[in-house]
Amino acid sequence: MFDEVAAGYDRTNTVLSLGNDQLWRVATTRAVAPRQGQRILDLAAGTGASSVALARSGAEVVAADFSPGMIAEGERRHGAGAPGGGIPNLSFVEADATALPFGDAEFDTVTISFGLRNVNDPKKALAEMLRVTKPGGRLVVCEFSQPPSRTFNGLYRFYNDRVLPIVAKAVSSNADAYDYLNESIKDWPDQRTLATWIREAGWTDVAHRNLSYGIVALHRASKPGAAQPTVG
Image (tube, rainbow, N blue to C red):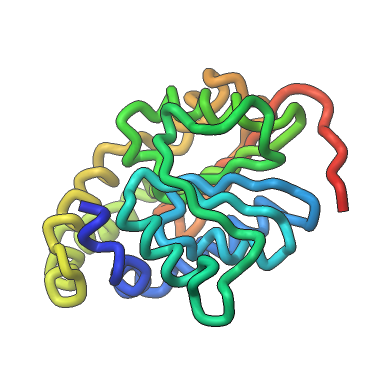
């Protein structure tokens, strides 16, 4: 499904989110606070839009995704063969979030945006993220959530149930994929539940803040242990 929508994925997301996806990306990048000398894993990276924003800091960024179609599109846009030679400190890897192809304690920060709910075992993925993160390193999760206001939540549900399918049919190459999107958002737990999952995986200093009235929540956490010095 994700392979089929890769080419128009970013444009469709911008339309369906009414442009808010770009604001969410900025908030996530600020939370990650990337800097030169760091190694960052961007999971469920898709075509690499969030990875590019992180790589602009000079950090080494690994964009990983389960979909080979997404990875291929990301490499076409930003890899060595892209116009201008691409981004040298950005690499693409096909990877399963529940069985990451990386060693222990490889990354200063692991981040995942709008992908955790698509993983077949989110709790296992959170444990894998902990494994590949250095002691003292950080986790940043940006994901759809549950607006706390009943009134706003009702309007949000109306948009997702009635408006989103119509718009998706008009702008997406695979409207059925966005029916799945709506269902996955409905079934996803609220902010407090996800925070509990993160703690149970072994992360500490777990906190979150709502974006766009709780349509999205930005979760942050740390791996226990002393932070490792970075080079650069």
